[in-house]
Amino acid sequence: MRILLTGGCGFIGSAVVRYLIEHTAHHVLNVDCMTYAASAENLSDIASNARYTHALIDIRNGGALRQVFDEYQPEAVMHLAAESHVDRSIDGPDAFVQTNVMGTYTLLEAARGYWHALSVEKKEAFRFLHISTDEVFGHLSKEDPPFTEATPYDPRSPYSATKAASDHLVRAWHSTYGMPTFVTNTTNNYGPRHFPEKLVPLMIIKALKRERLPVYGQGQNIRDWLYVEDHAEALVRAVERGVPGQTYAIGARQPHTNLDVVRKICAIVDELRPDHLEPRERLIDFVSDRPGHDFRYEIDPSHAERSLDWTATHSLDAGLRKTVQWYIDHQSWWQMIMDQRYNGQRLGKGS
Ligand code: NAD
Ligand code: DAU
Image 1 (tube, helix red, strand yellow):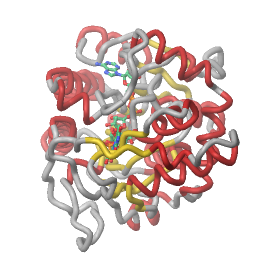
Image 2 (cartoon, rainbow, N blue to C red):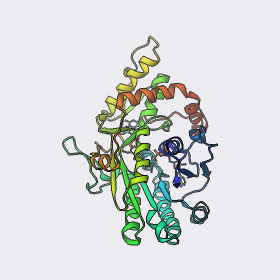
Image 3 (cartoon, helix red, strand yellow):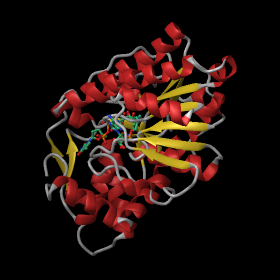
Image 4 (cartoon, rainbow, N blue to C red):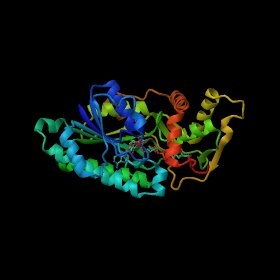
């Protein structure tokens, strides 16, 4: 297939592009306008591959998108481009409405114009996969069963509200126009190339530097942690086998409190970077909570596992170990982001 993929220079997008190039014969056109969250180095190992191309286009630019659809003639779209950080959405929701809602709408319309003109056969084979989040379902108490595809939407942050809006648009384009769209809703990812302001990379970097580790509230919030390469595999299966109109809720069956995750990271860093000082766990600092902080996310991935013939293979311990090792081996990657994009400012609240 020729796949037009958006957001390929970000954390998950780059893992998906790498998976497509290294494990399949598909061709990829990566539409990414390179926001603060993007890094060209994320794809430096496959950038010269003949099956890969990058188009520096903002998904809010309908004219540029229409041109690229006409020129590239994709057989599928994988839409990952988004503003993705909850804390940023609280500080400045505008970019989230612009990219997640208007950008998705603009992409859908460009795709619809292109799709409409295809032959009947190609129209039927075309796929539009929208990559979304479990945050659209709101949050769970300790006793609630995990989210499934049937859980009603109840987004609570500007980020999740804009992702929910984009999910509704994508489904409406299927029911109204018959476009072969479908949606995946996934739990928290972690792994190599994760932007250093999200929990896991932030804690690894701070633990390596022996800085205070800012845990919101009492660290009792629960997330279901999926290793990014497992997610990339699931998304490729989804674009190959997904049924239009369906939803696939993708999770790892690995729920842990934030405190648990931070303690695990500290123990791994202590082991891989021993320095005879106090255990890094003592650097944990309970700081003021995120406003409207969702308590618990967890997905029941049974439907996706059955339909896509996929399960997450990394345990949290194994995935964290690989991730910590990657950050130890790639200090120049995160150091450059911190120096250039933050002008020396420290990352993370409470630091
Ligand atoms: P990210 O922030 O790391 O990367 C986003 C990418 O999109 C960047 O390369 C950026 O340059 C690009 N982008 C942003 N706005 C754009 C625009 N207007 N035009 C073109 N490109 C633009 O994000 P991520 O963590 O890799 O998440 C990717 C997708 O997966 C998002 O849609 C997110 O909502 C979803 N998701 C993420 C997680 C997670 O744990 N990170 C979990 C579930 C779902
Ligand atoms: O559930 C999927 C979502 O996971 C994705 O849709 C989002 O794009 C992705 O960013 C992620 O959202 P979270 O808000 O769960 O991720 P974050 O890494 O920001 O925070 C994880 C948890 O850790 C959350 O409960 C807040 C807490 N936290 C976060 C930071 C940055 C801290 O305690 N301290 C911190 O410094």
